[in-house]
Image (cartoon, rainbow, N blue to C red):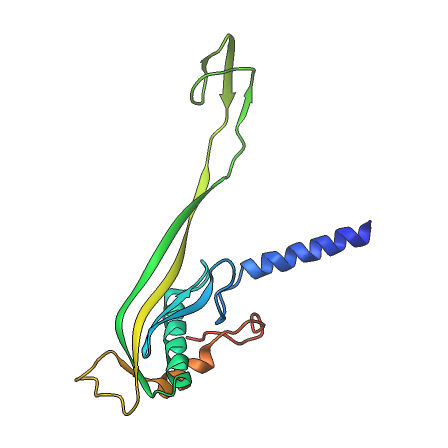
Length: 188
C-alpha cells in the first residue's frame, strides 16, 4: 500500500512539474500548446504558436518566427515575408481565500454578518481576505509567404526574414521538450 501511495505521489509531482514550466518548442499538444501550421497555397502558410501561462510573449513570438524559418527551408526557399501577424493575450483571474469564515446556524438568508435568516436567528463572524492573481497566455499568428533568392533590403520589405539567419539567431535559445530544468531554454 505504501508503494502505491509513493508512486501516486511521485506521479502527482510529475504532473505538477509539467504544469509549472513554460511551453517548450514542440508541435501543438492535445491541450493546444505548441506550434501548428497550415498550408494555404504553394508558398503561403499560417503559422501559430500558443504558450501556457508561464510562456512569455517574446518567447511565443520567437518560436513562431523559428517555425516559419524551418518551413521556409523545408520548402527549399531562402526567405519569408510576414504578410499578416497578431499576438493575442488571454487573461484569467483566480481568487484565493486567505482567511476562514466562521458562523453558526442553521441560518438562511443573504450576505454575511449578523442578521435574520430563515426561521432561525443566525450570524457569522470573521474577516474575508484574499488574493487575486492574474494569468496571461499568449498565442502568436502569422501568415507568411516564402521565396527563393536573396532577402530584399529592409527599406524595401521590412517584414522579410532570411530563414537561415533566423534559425542561427533564435535556435540556441529554444527550449525543447526534455530540456526543462537542464539549463537549456530561452536566455535573455
